[in-house]
Image 1 (cartoon, helix red, strand yellow):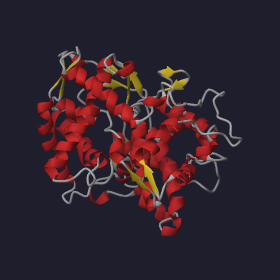
Image 2 (tube, one colour):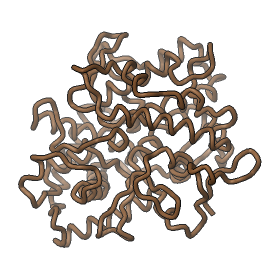
Image 3 (cartoon, one colour):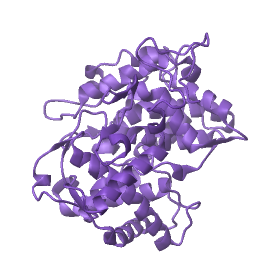
Length: 431
C-alpha cells in the first residue's frame, strides 16, 4: 500500500490540508508514477496516429531524421560518448570555453568537503542545493539575464537560473542556521518571498523574470511540506535529510528509480499548485485530455527532472539508482520543440504558433503527450545510430547528449535568439 509518510507519533498527516494517505486502490495512486506517464501518453499518441485528433497529425517517418540529428549533436558535444546524466548539475557547470567552471566542485573545495570521508554530508548538501534549484527552474522568459559575479559572464534561461539559484544557496539563502550556510531548512524556505527571489536573480524593470510569485510560492510550500513530513526531512526539517531516508530504504546499496520518483511524487506532491484534485489528492503536473484513460494525462515533468538531478549526489554517496529507463523523457519546450521543429507532430491549425497558449489547453497537453512518446522512439534510434545498448546509454544520457541540446541547436538555427517554436504562458511552476 502506498502511503504518505507518518509523523513522529506514527500518525498520517492529512488533517492539515497538505498531506493525505493514498491507499492502494485510490484513483490518484495509479497516476503517481512514471508508468502512468508513459501509458497515458501512449493512449493520446495512438489517438493522434489514428487520425482521430482535431489538433495534430503524427508523422513517425520523421523519427530517423530526428535521431540522426540528435546522434550528430551527441558526437559533436561528446566525441567519446561519455555523456553525463541530464540533470540540474549541468547548469552548475555553465560558462564558455576556458571560463567554464564547475561551481559545485569549487564550493566543496572551499568548504573542505571534497574527501571521501565527507561523501554522505556532501550528498545531503547536494540535495539541499538541487531541490530548490529545480523548483526555480521553470522557463525564465526571453528577456531575463543573470550576470555571474564570479566570471562576469551573462547567462540566460536554464544556465542563468542554475547559476542564480546556486549563488543564492552558497550565500546561505536557504539556511536557517547562522554560520552554516550550506543547507536548506524549512524554517527559512517558509519565509522566502518574491522580493527575495527578485534580488537574488537580479530582476529589474528592464530584466523581468517570468513567474516570480509562482517561484517564491513553490519554495514557501516546500518549507511547509517539509515541516509536515518528518519521516522524510527530519526535525528540524532539512531537505538533505532525505538522503538518510533513501539510504535506509536502499537494498544492497541500490535504489530503484521508480521508488525514488514515487517518494518525491508522494512526499513533495503537495508543493505543486492544486489544479486537478482526486478525492483529496492533488495530481500536480497532470492535465485533462479526452483520449487518455480516465481523461487525465500525468507528466510530472519537474518531479522527474528532480529525480534525474538526485542521481549524482546519491551515487557520489555510494548509492546506485537502477532502472533509469522507467523514467520518461521530459515534455518541455526543448525536447518538445525539437520534435515539433522536425514535424514529428504537425498542428492542424496553421495559425497555432502565432499566439501563446495556456498550459491546460488540450493542444498543449496533446503536444506534451506526443513528446513523451516521441522521445522513446527517438532514443531507440539514437542508440542504434551510436551502436550502444540501453544499459550503456539510458534515456537520462540520450536527453542530455542529446535531445535537449539538439532542441536548442535547431531552435537557434530557425529563430532569432533560439526561441521555442511557440509560446506557452507560464506561472513559473510547470516549464
